[in-house]
Structures are given as C-alpha cells and as structure tokens.
Image (cartoon, rainbow, N blue to C red; front, side, top):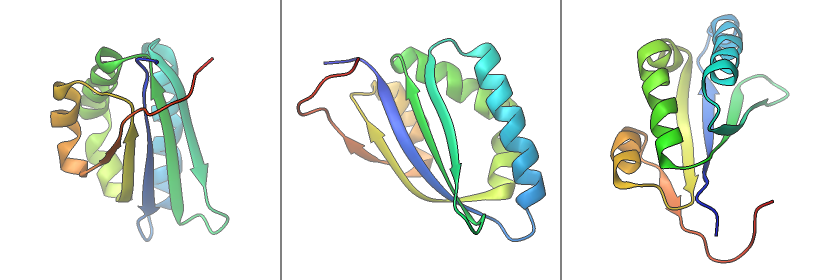
Length: 119
C-alpha cells in the first residue's frame, strides 16, 4: 500500500467573506504549488451557491504533510479561519503521530487503508 496521506476538508464560507476567501484560495494554491513538491494534489471545489468549499489534498507521506501544515500555520491559518468554518474532515491513510497531533484541532475522522492501489 501507498505511504500517501490524503484528506477531504469540507468548509462553509463565512457570510460576507467570499471575496477574501477567493483571494486567499489563489494565494494558497500558488504557495503550495511553488513550495511543496511532496503535495501531489491540492484541489479546491466550490458549490454552485458559493457557500460550501471542499478541499482535496494528497501528500507523498507524513513529512510532506508536516511541511504543508508548517507553511499553512505560518502564512495562512489566521486568514483561513477568518473566512471559513470547517464542517467535516476525513483523513485517509496512515499518518504519523505528529500529523495526528497537528490535525487534532480539526477533529478529523481517520480512515485506514483496507484494499486497493494507487498509480
């Protein structure tokens, strides 16, 4: 099985924050694309009414997740939480203990690999 860690984070856009959210989203995608080679997927999805956002993220391994979380905390966390309210978070794979500790504030559900393959 793969060492990849992935997740789906569901969020509501806070009332009156859509313009700030869109600007932040662009900044975050650019930052991750330029600075995190261990991030394989970093995809944002928006509902038709522009009130709900899902973010799908996939990382090479737990150290790549920790690199991402460090950059997020240093550069974006305060603005992110000012624009968005988490409503669901599911983590897939076998993250290391430090990843679980770092994600604990978001109260994720963890799903361990059972069967399958990644290409």
